[in-house]
Length: 274
Image (tube, rainbow, N blue to C red; front, side, top):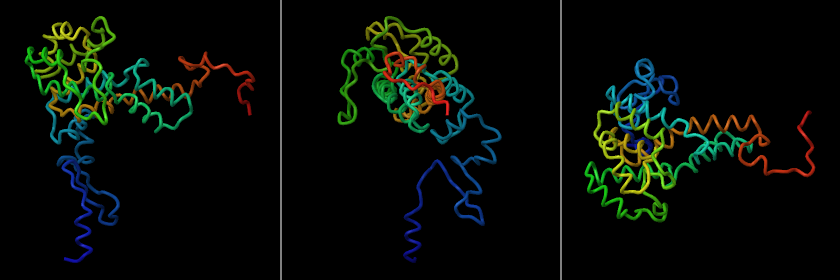
């Protein structure tokens, strides 16, 4: 074997997700692309839905009809978390400030990644599910004695029970509506257990269930890993962040609903009419 061949072998990308066959006249372009063995442009593009393809990417297997529908409903539920969300607000700030499209999305991901109703909270609750399963007594013990965070150099300890709302008095209507729809869609056991035990858990936690808790539970029914749930939660919220950023960029800072009234120019030149 020549040295060149050895280097070529070392340069091979190892992935179970993707395989490409190059065009015969252009090694830099793909003639065939396969995701988990399925022809993306010859088969998936024609026959699959977005939710089915997304599931295939994450799980490397074709979803059942109920799994695909559950993922689709999750995507709808969190596509636009609204202007109260840190994710959306960060994107709005970037948009109204004239930042690039990429900057708005990065801002959204950064603000929506943490322990307070963010991606890492979803991951934490999924880890609680893995530890407690559908054992109510175990959940009570976990809530009363929360475990310390494992990666303290990256994440601080949770300041509230993951998946619950420390500032809420009662479970919000959108949270209850989402839980009801997802539970009826899913064939899994986690959502059904949660809907049956929600009020008991809320009493023990002394705070209501939050939408992040519902989504984390739905991800468990899809048999996702916590790290998969965390990144998928971040990804599926980007549509709302994107459209709000675009809207605020178009409206300009004078109409920005949060800080515009607090900005007073002493020598305002007026709009640019050039």
